[in-house]
Image 1 (spheres, rainbow, N blue to C red):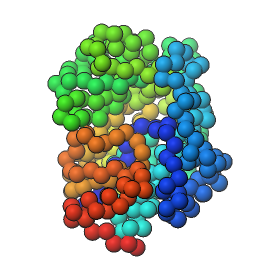
Image 2 (cartoon, one colour):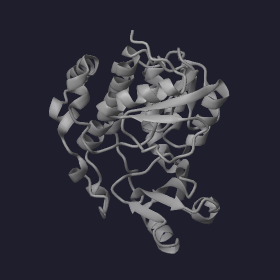
Image 3 (cartoon, rainbow, N blue to C red):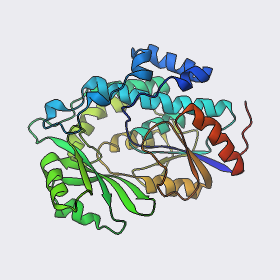
Length: 326
């Protein structure tokens, strides 16, 4: 049976803990390597709680997450996702196809062989040092929308609502709600939240948002560095959340990494690409957006803890994917 991996969006601020590090030598070696390359210590990588460093109700750009918080959280997500993939590979589980969204697209490119691990971490270090707010422009933020399944997105964003853009579409949750991320100017997002039915829109001023044309300045800042990064043709079929298409070459991946800044991401694009390739079950390695309850065209197993590893092997065996240790 064809197995897919999905690397999703989201940057969790909770610490991943030491269970995987303590239980699996391959994770231990990888985490130690990440610490050496990045200069982050094991507390920062495994146990430091970053949730208190970010106020989701911040009232100004000055209160946005610091560079250190953004950098550490992204490194931790990458470390966990690739480390869990290493653990699963030692068990005999390797993806036949991979899809990625947002930061997960960077990790997916690495897992597919298009980007070296050290280059990926260096790229994140560079990006997180760049300005997150365009000089002279109003502060930007993001908002989580939990909308009716039949909601008209044009009412919430786009031409009818200047300053608010669709940043990410995660599809339908439990058949009851359409889960999206809006991105735009904070004042426009607050107006949207006030005019929408109660409880539908939660504005997060301290998080800059992204995946919109408002981030063109960030695209322009990133491009000179990204142009110098060595991208290879993916060794494993790779699918994008930006477009319903397979990324065939290193240049395709480079363009996708840059477009990730200014274009909305769609889980449906990844799902469609993997399904067309014949994927019949998928693993989500690492902690990111919770996928339980979201709609997929195949069974999906999230693996983020030591306990999940054993459960995943059992579930995949029941689905007809044999696990044979290397």
